[in-house]
Length: 110
Image (cartoon, rainbow, N blue to C red; front, side, top):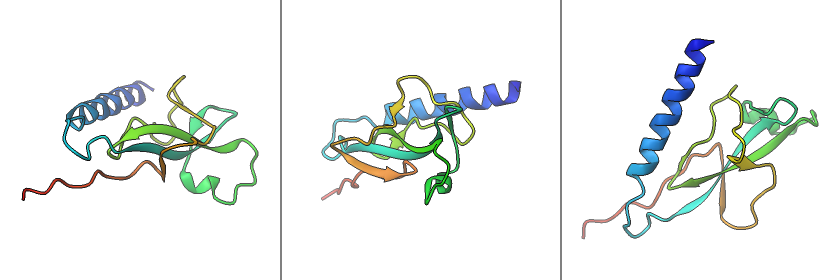
């Protein structure tokens, strides 16, 4: 149990550092949207995304976490969803990417 807590802390710390590094003010750096991840609402835990495809379990639903330039603080599989981290309601604006992967346009040097 202790190793899980250490891994979770390390993951969130690393994700926070990556987010801070990627928040420069260049053109294209403000590309933002939402990561769509699968979660078990009854246990408030992230599960494998494939479980939400053609789901038959009413406890499984897509969960949306804000991201910027493909960087997000979405929890790893099996981790608890933090209060206020996201929403089960699909965002009305912004791009939604399944799994939270994505990237910002690269900056040209010309």
